[in-house]
Image 1 (tube, rainbow, N blue to C red):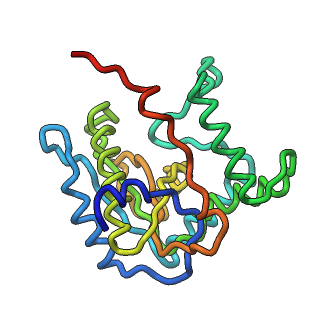
Image 2 (image 1 turned 135 degrees about the vertical axis):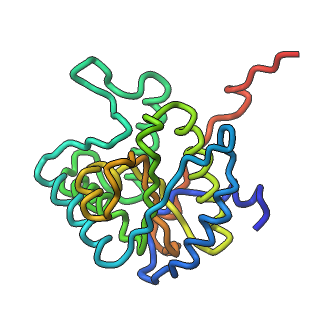
Length: 228
């Protein structure tokens, strides 16, 4: 696949075939993606590939904790509403709302349908039934500093693009790492690591309506200032 095609066609895949992805294939994807840029070549990333019974335990844990009303508490801090931080403001919130409205329309979820919304939430914490997930960590000595997180951003985009070359789809998901202490226990991640983000990986089910959905992007002219 040509690079520009890969960039344009990449999307968050939210429905997967049950077909297993060989671990060696995922390792190939990661080996290529590790060519992503990092500040002073620090390469701050570490990976855990989770499949099989451990992945089932991870899914069950997330669904159970959410159904019991537990709030996400990932290692990368969320907005603190008690301190007046309400999350995305202005145009950024608007984009989030448009995404949700459009996606739920594709899924046939009507506004106010709480059962359908809860079912979707459960599917999210099942990681859309992907056959494998990748959990990306950094050493706690880096203390979630800005530039290592920028490096992780470059890395996960490179993973998502590389996966397409192997006919695989991905979805970058905070839900995978929302409950880090439980994730550490199930996966065996040392306390010396901060859990940054998770990614699903698998063969997309292109017949599922959700995979026909692709989020919009603003016109670059509205985002651009040229200084000469």
